Length: 538
Image (tube, rainbow, N blue to C red):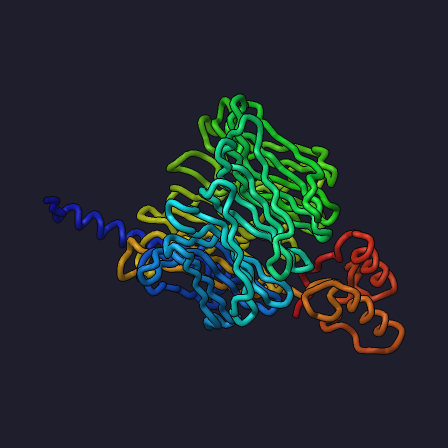
């Protein structure tokens, strides 16, 4: 039997006191110096099974409703898909669970919402042990939570099929990718396109050279319905390469690009994005013979030609630097974040690249205890501010740690969240809406049973000036009606945009014909985005 001595009790209590003091100082610092952000609400979700509830993905619609999904223990059904819709004020509007045919583990990994408020969820669902094992399971819900359809995908040999992520296009087509066991071909990419009614339009599998494992990790789709998939593809010579594929709307392979890093080791992509011109960006890690792993970020043009390739080495011998998330803004700037250093002294590492691949800035975040910080996700708002979230080790456990950088890379604020159990809090996703609200979701230790977890969703509000330049109709979009509004104001004596600066697309402090031409060029000719003016207040 193990007995806790008085000395150990004192040490444990002392550490908790130190952490409490540290959190208090952090809180006071945030309030007194960085008062641009506040917590609007915090919501926890504990499923009916009172077990481990792990939130994996997040979406926000144009009305500010928040959607969270993941896996939650049911009553005798093990893990189930559990999707929660919150109103902008944090009230629960509905909760929907999905228990697959085997009543085994069902874990959602991705969620999206379309312009009509329909919700799409995908993940992996236990089909039946010994028969189909895990299948993709993709669900479409209406805005009020009614199931519109459920589609399962069982690969060619009735084995494991694990969906990674999904995307939707403007016609409500749904794209899902992940990894599917092909028997003698090992794990293969398996990408599916469903129509709006759930009909399967096409399925495409990718088996790399040598019949080794191929695991898709990320997917996106452009306005024309082209689908882009990236992942890791193993062979017998280079171990693991980054393979990116572009499919046409009818599923034809337009191009396939394979990247093998200089050490010919394990190269893993974690995220990809596309810009308005059809350029494709992929980020992840690559093996290095000296520093173990480095960030790697690649930019391809719409035809698959490599435009540039950038490595980032955190600078420590034997360090494991790994980029985990990427996004691109309307001007073609590229943002990546991840982890630099080696356990137990890793930090967030965030980089902004210009469209030509030049480093604009790079920033490292090391938490208050100089321990383990691991960035998970990032997003960029309409003004080019950058938001990063991840987990920060405050000596005893991990907490959410979310921070904001200006477009120039200056730190605006840092927010830590430690749940009531003083246990581990692991974020998984982050979103910023057009009003500057920041949402973070993940899992948090439960007070009554710290080894179990709840979904944890946080909404933060900011007090910045956030009116969108060019958005003359104030609907948080820049479309043809904004041009019409400016024409009516200039030539038909109709009311001016409110505030006035919404109509000032070129940031010259006036609304003139040049602003109309600027918007026409942006909307119809893929010209530069309206100039963001941080002095433009609601």
